[in-house]
Amino acid sequence: MRRLRVLVLMHPDFMPPDSTDGYTARQINEWKTEYDVVSTLRAAGHDVRPLGAQEEIKPVREEIENFKPHVVFTLLEQFHNEPTYDQHVASYLELMQIPYTGCNPRGLILARGKDLSKTLVHHRRIAVPAFAVFPMRRKVKRPARLALPLIVKSLNEDGSRGISQASVVDTDEKLAERVAFVHERIGTAAIAEQYIEGRELYVGVLGNNRLRVLPVWELKFGTMGGQAIATEKVKHDPGYQERVGIVDGPANLAPEVRARIQRTAKRIYRTLGLDGYARIDFRLSADGTLYFIEANPNPEIAKSQEFATAARYDGLDYPGLLHRILALGISRANAGASVG
Image (cartoon, rainbow, N blue to C red):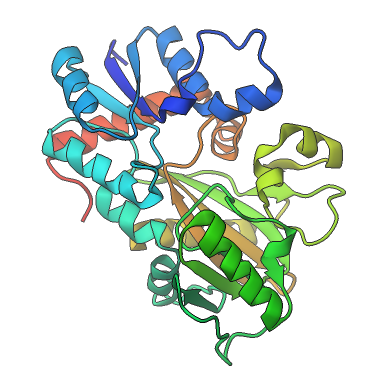
């Protein structure tokens, strides 16, 4: 790939240092994606300029006018501290007619709402857990159709924010308590969905029109006690991961099961209007039923994260992955419009 001017948008708190020397694993974990993207693109010869952006859009416009990037690599997962505002940043870049990486605004909207994405996918005859949404400041009453146990999450936060062992509830009292926790601590509506006992599977998809589906990846919970769920500690605490043996890797599946899961991931990606890159999360129950859990457009792409490790297993090294993501953003802009 030719030498590019790349503006990398990120949360100001995650602006990475020039080196990881002297930092603990927990500190590095906070900004590992930002560090890996910036350092890898610089090592590949690109002119890379990181920019922390969260409260004001004006600095983004000024940097675009002054730096004149060929492409914006967006690592923003929220704006004004609202996770649903990331689609506005993508829309702004489209209005500025600047190529950007990752998903288009429509796909971000459809995927971010866990209720909306499940409803759309269910209409494609793909299994989803039964669910109910509990808006803010409403009395919690479990619908009769929704059987316990349930897992309670934020309706639109990702990264397992707010998820712990207490998120799995087996009484109406615990359901009300956990919904209140999400409302008060996370500040969003809550979704309670049927808890699916089974294997935790992730499938990365890369592409705009022609799609590359990465190998099926499995999160294994080691000696973790309680329910086998991807809590905040499981996702973000390196010490805990090492202590209990949390690992991820290629799922050991029969070839026909693996192919079915990959086909389903591709159907979901298209159903939700996704492009760029995304990770589709599933639960595979003991009876072989594959349940769609959620879609994650613009997932974490640190070298150590599932998306990058699955790509490497599939023959696409980390610099190659980042270059492919850049190329997809540029080609979408050259095509003249986002998906949908």
